[in-house]
Image (cartoon, rainbow, N blue to C red; front, side, top):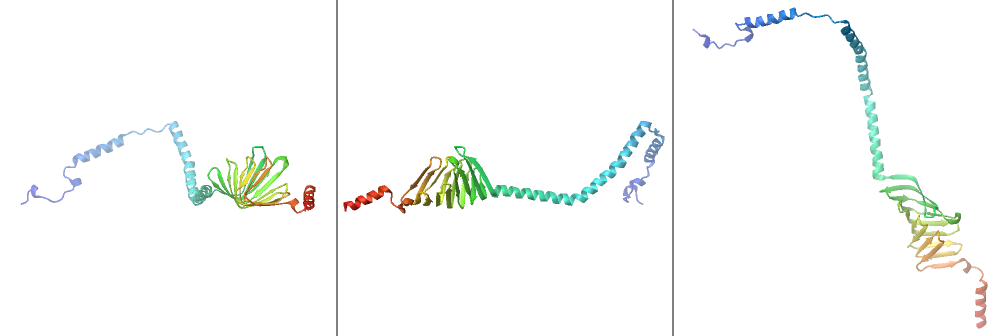
Length: 255
């Protein structure tokens, strides 16, 4: 015969034999709920609830409409944002990496308050001061309403120093008829000085001149050619001057 200690069958707690205590607790909770007295809301509370219900009546549909509109418009907004971001990146790349500009114009004044202007087909900014030029052209105002025009294939303009270095097919023309050609030229725009250490071919009212370099101070009216060269003056091809005629006649008399 089995004893209570030997009975190992599973037992459920909710079917325990001693349930009177838990049932009494549940009965007490039910009676407390039934005995609770609920007071009716007053007019102020009713008005507050009515206003909250009216606000929710319009706010919730409006919020739902905003959410639906944002969901519908989000693809277009995302597209515009991506486009603007791509445009800003491209502008930053062009500004930082290239710094290119077409049909650039630079203006300034020299030490004598004469205006000069530099134009170029394309420019490339190299830092805050240096500008590389393609097909540069410089127009310079000189004293006495005169002017000079100089151009080349390439150039470097230093903005703070007001210097212009020209290379490849440099051509200088002045309104007095002087025309100069050479492979390079260095210009001090502030002092109106142009110089070169390369060969130069010059033509003008004086004749023609080939030299290994030149120095031109346009404000002081100085033009110097350096190195060995060939000079052909315009009066060398014309009739002899009276002094030359007298020298020739004297030479013939001595013979």
